[in-house]
Image (tube, rainbow, N blue to C red):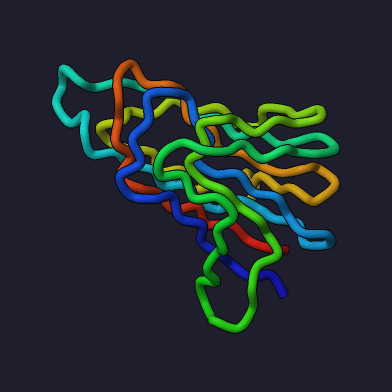
Amino acid sequence: MSRLYTALMPNALARTVQFDAFELTPADDKPIALHHIIIGQGTDLGDAAEEVLMMEILRGGTGMTSGSGGTGSLAAQTPTLIDSVDAASGVTFDTGNETLATFTSGVTVWREPFNIRIGLDRLFEPEERIECSQANGGIVIRIEAPADSITWKGGTLVFEEL
């Protein structure tokens, strides 16, 4: 039976460069599907500070090397099961990495601009859900570098372990 999990991006994550909001590496025989991505910020709220940034979802080919670091990054976090407390996820995930993940032969699966004042709130229709297995390496949700420092107020990624 499949289960829904959340992976959380830290609060007060200041970034001036492109970064990986989420990096997910599925466990063996436990593919995943993305359901919902929410990311918001709390520093650039006025019209003059408004920017539109690009969010990309990348899926690795035969392997993925996780990125690292940056103040406030949370490496190797444990996803939380939404509907129960009895099953741990097999996914390994990192969040907030300034050193970007690399892929053996990755592809960009999704690219979407979003207004930082509004934030990103992407709910995938069932037919649009991006899936990944261990054979695909992993999935990365990457945010383009802003024009100036932004303090991201956090975010939530909802994914299903199939």
